[in-house]
Image 1 (cartoon, rainbow, N blue to C red):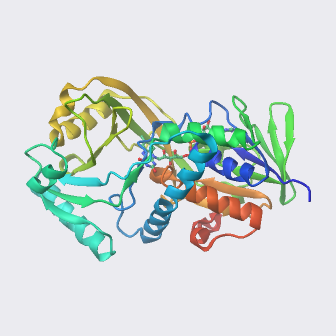
Image 2 (cartoon, rainbow, N blue to C red; image 1 turned 90 degrees about the vertical axis):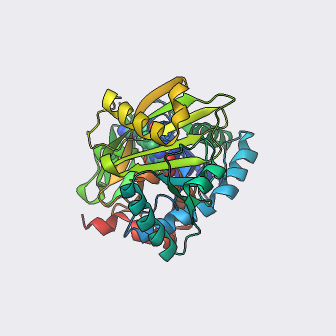
Image 3 (cartoon, rainbow, N blue to C red; image 1 turned 135 degrees about the horizontal axis):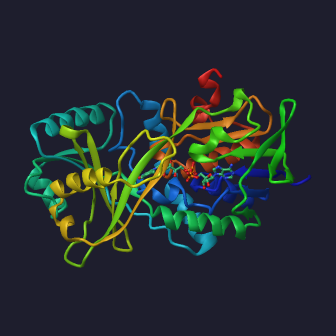
Length: 378
Ligand SMILES: Cc1cc2nc3c(=O)[nH]c(=O)nc-3n(C[C@H](O)[C@H](O)[C@H](O)COP(=O)(O)OP(=O)(O)OC[C@H]3O[C@@H](n4cnc5c(N)ncnc54)[C@H](O)[C@@H]3O)c2cc1C
C-alpha cells in the first residue's frame, strides 16, 4: 500500500506531537513552521497539567477531556523518552490553590464544593496545614485546596524531544517555511504552497495555534474561530535555601489576578500568567509583570529576592468556547488540531493520539467528537 503523506501546518507542541505519532506509525509526515518549531505558545507555557485545580464552572466536557489527557501522559512520556533518550521533566507535584482575604476564601470554598460535587479528589486545608505541605507559603495564607492529582511537564524539554522523535522516525521538519496557502481542489485538500513551491499531500493538519484561521486558502466552512489571548510570564532562579516543592496557584479576588508558581527541575521558578485580549501584541508590559509579582509575593514572599531569568509573552489559541477544535472538517483530508487555549500542553498527548487515529484508522474517537469544528455551525 502506498505510504500516506501528511502535511502539518505549525510546529508547536500540538503539530510536533501529531507528527511524531504519525511518523512512528510509518506515515510520511512533513511539518512546516514559519519560524523555529516549539518557540511560540508552547515555549512560553508553564507546563502545568492541572485539570483538577483549573476546572471551570459549567465546563464538564472539557474537564473530562483534561482528565483523560492527564491519564494518557505517563505512557506517552515513557514512549517519547524511550524513542529519543530525552527526559521531559514529568513531575507529580500537586497544586495548592491558596487564599488570603475573606473574599479569596469564599471563592476557594465555592470552588472546593464544585470540585467535590464533580467527584474530584481534593482536600480543604487550613493555612497551617498548607504550610506543612509548602513551607515557603506566607503566614498570610489562611486556607488552601490541595489538588494532589495535578502534575507538570517541562514544556521546553517536551517540544525538543518531540522534534527529535519526529525526525528520528523519518519525519521531515521545515523551519522558517511558513505555509502561504492551503491548496484545495473542489471539496478535497491537495497540499500546501510555501513561496513558489507546492507540497502535495493526502492529508493536511492545521495546527498553527492562534494563527490557524489566517492561513490563506481556508474556506469559511473550515476556518476555525480562534484568536490570540496574551499570557505574560516570567522565570526566576530558585536558590538552595528557596525551592518550592509543590505548584502554588493564587486567585487574587480583589484584582481578578491569577498567579501561579511552578518549580522546574533546572531550578527555574515559572511565575505566570496574565490573560489579555490584545490581538497579536506580544509585548511584555510593566503592568503585567507588576500584577504577577505582587500576587506571587503575597503568597510566597521569598520570591522577592530571587534573580529574574526571563520575562516573555505568548499567545494562547483561544476558541469561541475555550475548548479545542479537533478532527475532520467539511473539506476531505483537512484535519483540525487547534484552539487548545490554556490546556495545550495538557492536551498534547491526547490530541496526538486522537488525530493519529482519525488519520490512520479513519475513525474519530468518541472523546473528541464533541470538539469538532461542526459545533460552530460555520
Ligand atoms: C503564558 C502561557 C502559559 C501557559 N500555561 C499552560 C499550562 O501551564 N498548561 C497548559 O496545558 N497550557 C498552557 N498554556 C497554553 C499552551 O501553551 C497552548 O495551548 C499550546 O502551547 C498551543 O500549542 P500549539 O502547538 O497549538 O500552538 P503554538 O505553540 O503557538 O504553535 C503554533 C505554531 O504554528 C506556527 N505557524 C503559524 N502560522 C503558520 C504558517 N502559516 N505556516 C507554518 N507555521 C505557522 C507558529 O510559528 C507556531 O510555531 C499556556 C500558554 C501561555 C501563553
